[in-house]
Length: 489
Image (cartoon, rainbow, N blue to C red; front, side, top):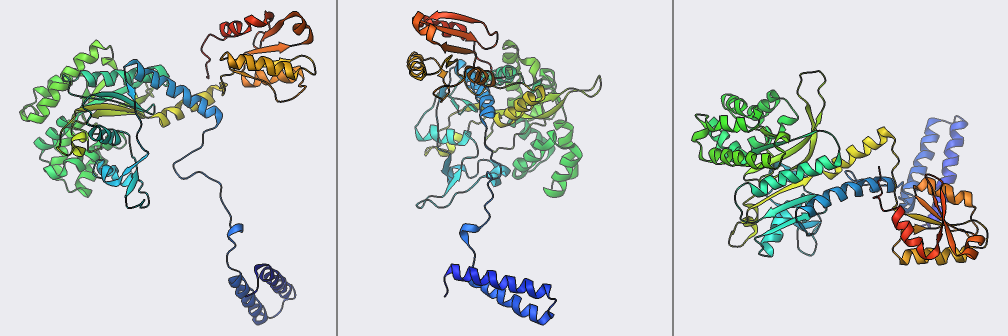
């Protein structure tokens, strides 16, 4: 067989012959004959892997983060992690993938969203879907029964046997602290209890086998109308219409502790043991939330279901509120930004002896929050600092590179965040412009006269004020002038 270069030449020549025949308006038979030869040559040539079109893109569902975006993202993370630490949490980490069997059967209808990996040396693996199931596996594997942890600025959990609703109330307090600190808008935290939901389904006549699937339908009420949810229950999941109607009478209610007290007197619901336990715990929870000063941010919402299978008690979800279109209307929820709940049975699924470790936790929707913060900054056209540089070491004349290098080394060794331009003889104007563009607040200027006098000229970029500072005092003066936390937005 001819080598590739020869075949490419033959294809090129045959292509020119076909084009020439078309220009000459040769007979159709002759053109078809030559085209057939061309196709035969191309088939011999085969695909050229090196010349295949390669589209540069990130995989679906992923994205890159620019320096500006990362600066915003880190600020969001700092707020979240500071709150977790303030509440005494330790940090742990777990692998980004788990044994497939670890994740199987924990997520209900969301299980179809799990990414499976290729067989790795006889182990079937999947990318973790959340941080809760890996945490439960970690507790069981290490025989831990008591820990307060956070993970990747997203998840916070309290594991251990404690008095009812105290850890749950703290989780809701943390959620409110974080959302308030981020200043992303008004929010509401919906709470419910899986035992109340299950009790409601039981008294309404839902078969036990359909509890979880009906639960996932109810969970859609924040996105679609009751009519659509009822249609799914009846048409797709085989629930009797009258049973769906009875469910609707309950799950469309929401309110505060007064609703809890009302349902405690409900002639049917109060006769269900599970529902009664859940309502009793919610009443206690509202007492603690009042003491924490956040009861006005909490709504008891019977439509909240949280579709994940592992929840066993209190569940909660924070939504941002959109201002009402007209006076008198209720604010609308515009998307979940945090959620969580109690999962007392999950650790026992992994323990060989089935020993349970009660747990409650929350997860912050950092991607959604980041998008909201980013959009707000774009609307306000606010400048975002992408570095934390405190000072630029600059020179006023030529041939001062060595002096700049000596000075910046002194600053780095003293823990000062400093930069210099990578030119031997940069113009002073260019150095000052760089500071303005990068948001660097100070410039330490070296000149021949300053070297003689043993001082450094320290210039404030914003005010353009300049002061001479003795070289031995420079570090402290920079620290003093930049002691205020640097804001990135």
